[in-house]
Length: 118
Image (cartoon, rainbow, N blue to C red; front, side, top):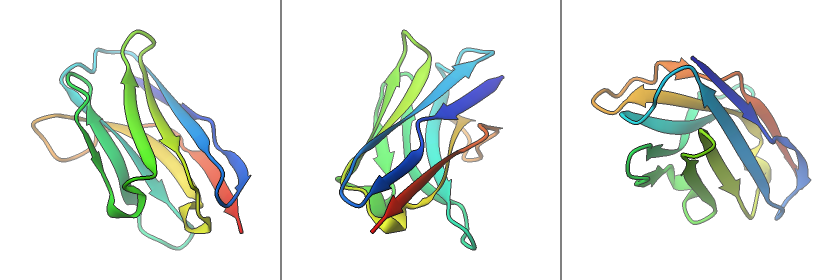
């Protein structure tokens, strides 16, 4: 199983970025796909999640109304559209997967760096 995140970069505050996570190695139809982030010196933080089967999303409070998670079933990808970026969004962003009946994420990608300058 592989989760390969990409799309990070350096942008100015107010800009947008789209992250992608290519997933391979198994079917994730019974899984919840999530994005998490970790800033230097801080705990890892939940960003967003979506069930692969029905696309129902959930968001962490800091990103509600600005980020959108989606599943591209045809391409086996998990997408995160990030708008109105703020310096506090700066972090390494990880995609992850958990079986929908459990709370623990068991598959993790390698992370992609997002840096937002003020």
